Amino acid sequence: MKKTLREYISEAENKKVAIGHFNISDIAGLKAIFSAAYEIGSTSSPDKSFDQQIPVIIGVSEGEANFIGHKQAAALVKSLREEYDFPIFINADHHKSLESIKKAIDAGFDAVLFDAGKLSLEENILKTKEVVNCVKFSGKNIIVEGELGYIGSSSVILEGIPEGANVNKEDLTKSEDAARFVKETGVDLLAPAVGNIHGMFKNMPNPAIDIERIKALREAAGIPMVLHGGSGITDSDFIKAIDAGIGIIHINTEIRLAWRQGIEKAIKENPNEIVPYKILPFAVEEVKKVVSQRLKLFNKII
Image 1 (spheres, one colour):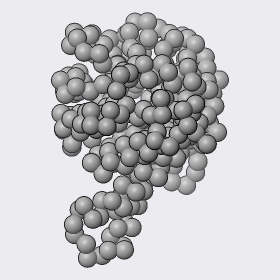
Image 2 (image 1 turned 90 degrees about the vertical axis):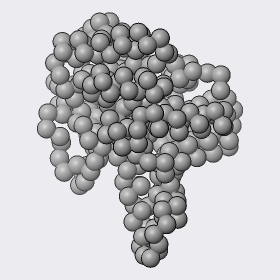
Image 3 (image 1 turned 135 degrees about the vertical axis):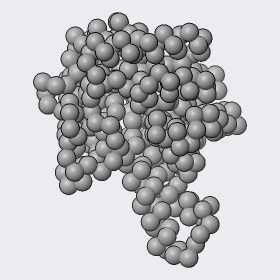
């Protein structure tokens, strides 16, 4: 694999497609995501793919990383990248402390997202800049993403809008704030609040996202944009968001739900089975379906 994650992000923007970012909590999720990306790349025509390979980003939040282990997660992703010469990368998703960011840096992550979106603009800038400086001091080619605006904090099934989430029009990320944030922090990627929410609603659709705001923010920020809380967003909004300037899209709740449904199906069909490697393939298959659909949509593969 000759290209860096930075190059793939730039290429995605130029092609008006988006790189899929999917979180994992176990090896079953990783197996499903990698298999989906690898198989799509193997069957796509050259004019609808990246050198016939579909780049993919594996995300681990602080909680997920603490469960798997930062070094272990990074090693698993690196092993797939090296063995298959495939563009699979790993991101420290929603890390909220400098200590956890340092763990990701030391483990060899390709990217880190420092989440201070719930703080005031001034506090967010101050703390995010500290992370950027820490990454620069490491001497490693690690991408730093900042979050501007609070969109909830859990990839779960929601009963209602999370308390404090910025979903009202007047609360969404503003262009002047985005420009200032990028200039003063030096981040490589920006995750704004544009009507998106972490999680999926139980009995109603997710709010529509503000496409015009994405366009304005991309122009004001001058760096690639990341759409968080992708689960529950409509296909048409995804395509509009990509065309407006989104280069990476995060999906987590959908694959967590698929994982759960796969496990439930395995136990229902095999009530006496206790062997993990005979149960987990059901979860792999369900997660793989979701990831395949999303990757084809984000890469505009029909």
